[in-house]
Length: 145
Image (tube, rainbow, N blue to C red; front, side):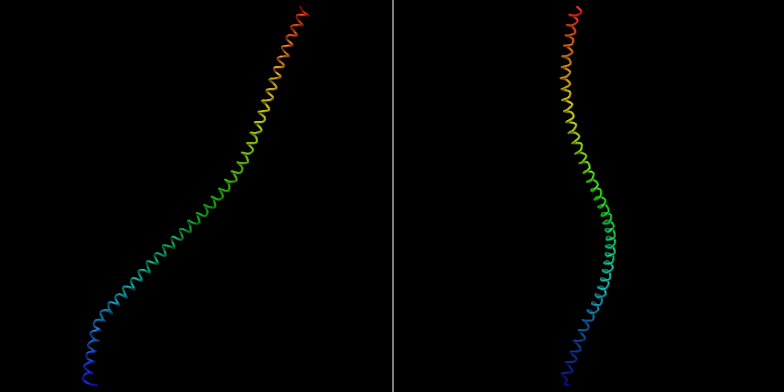
């Protein structure tokens, strides 16, 4: 080895020492950042767990609401089915009432014709009664008089 080689090693050692002086604070900052990152991750994990617990509670509540809605839907479907049956019965009753109304109209028309015939018979009887009165008057006049 020469004296030039010794000087180069000293320079190299000095440069290494200076670099280490610059790197050491950076390494410390990296350790601090790693610690902060670890705390941040833990905080995020805690928040995610809280969110997950809240979501599970919401799921439980929505499941209960869904179950109640399903029960109400079944009840509504049953009521609609009953209503449909009642409507069908009412339609049948309405049809019967229409037929009864038609029959009543026909009976009313028959009664009207019967009344007209009775009016005609009444006029005939009045005419016969008048003739009998005339005949009685004639006979009384002829026989009694």
